[in-house]
Image (cartoon, rainbow over all chains, first blue to last red; front, side, top):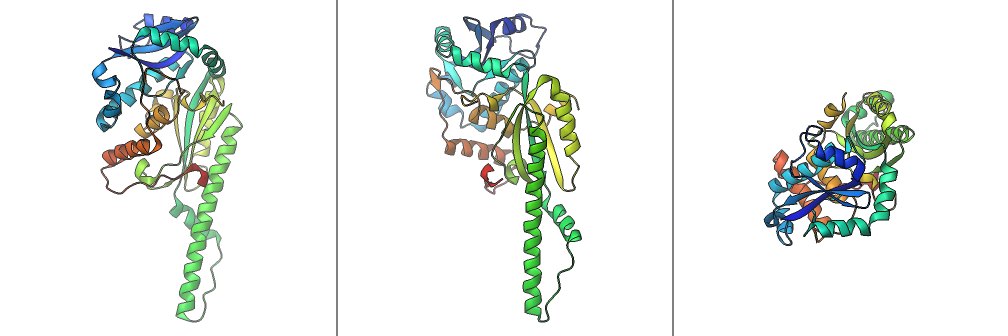
Length: 258
Length: 65
């Protein structure tokens, strides 16, 4: 067996959660805490054949296996963050023995404490903004006055083509502006924010285009109003849709620069 | 919307993006180091597996925004 480390938190918060099986019933029964000073790592013994030195690098190439493991990693951290402040760690952090986990906690003690203090009572939410550019184009067209058409058919074609292009550009500009406005509105009610890679249609499986992929760190007390604001912004403008996800373990807000 | 309902929207890509790309860098005894290329390949494989399409997705950069 080797030891997979999911996250780090305060021992006094984590111990009661793990010692009471009824509290978070979906947690794996073999989840354990390894402690150093007042910190604890949330650890699960895992088979060496999957998580050992060379096995892991090979294993992650198996999409089905990775899907199961990634979902589990996130589910465990999500459950725990409902009841405790936790620093969520990256996928696939494995130690040979319990002592090495303890040494790691000691070594990174100051850094962990800083992050836990920053994350206290805060949760991560994701907001994606999608634009249906065809629909926005029709709005742009309705607003535009009719473009005068030239005399010759060739000239008429060029004019028409140019008009179409400018409508597409205008629609895209409009969509970008809306996305920016969403970001500005949400930024005002949150502690921190950042934007991530925008995903293609293949990735999202949607027919509209992702314009913004943002994450926000939200104070626990203001979560309801944050979600209300997202709902308000969703559907406020024709062709613009918002997608809310969360609360997440604060993966996006634990970098050392934070 | 209660919190559980909001959670239904979570896609696998969102999870992977977070747990592979983000999260604290801590050194373990065994660390998988997935370079950018590998990560994109994994994400793409997942996308293709889930929607059963053959086109290769274009991974835009948020700098466009």
